[in-house]
Image 1 (cartoon, protein in one colour):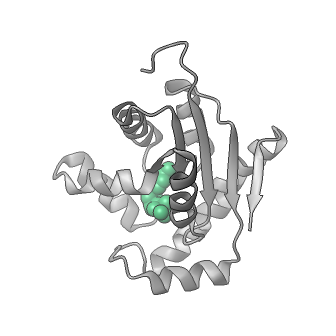
Image 2: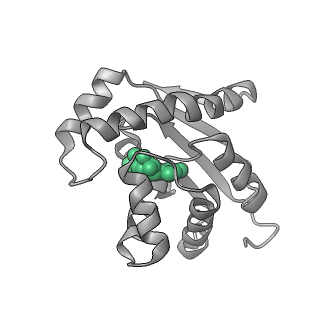
Image 3: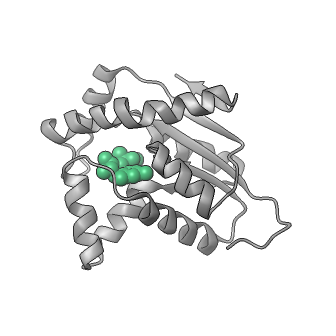
Length: 171
Ligand code: C5P
Ligand code: MG
């Protein structure tokens, strides 16, 4: 894990599917020296490795479901340590309370604040259907499931950070 005594800065970036998390992060990173880690991108990388875990992740993502928290938190920790940086913008995480709890147990670095990219559902749908990134979860059926997961699982996490006074909304 991280050397103790070193101050590590973590900012989470949360938003619905297609809200522009990755796009916004790319802008912030180039200005402030953060390392941008996308939970979704780390999982897509893992899918490329032809392992049993990769196949399991691929199937869950195809269905628009969430991957077990322990897996994504381990991937995040590995990427954070490998970067050598001390400032991280983590996008697409935490997606549910289980993600948040696993992070608090394993990585333990309290986020400075949490950016919420607020975007209407129509706008998100439009963006996803126009982005052509070759993602097999960018189809109408999976998109519907991803919106449901956002409503049911991610909103409680957003409310948690709002109560803590850590939420910053970006339009
Ligand atoms: O953030 P992004 O839209 O790239 O995430 C794509 C998919 O990756 C999600 O729909 C979900 O299946 C998976 N994911 C996850 N847990 C996270 C982030 C992403 O299971 N914390
Ligand atoms: Mg993304």
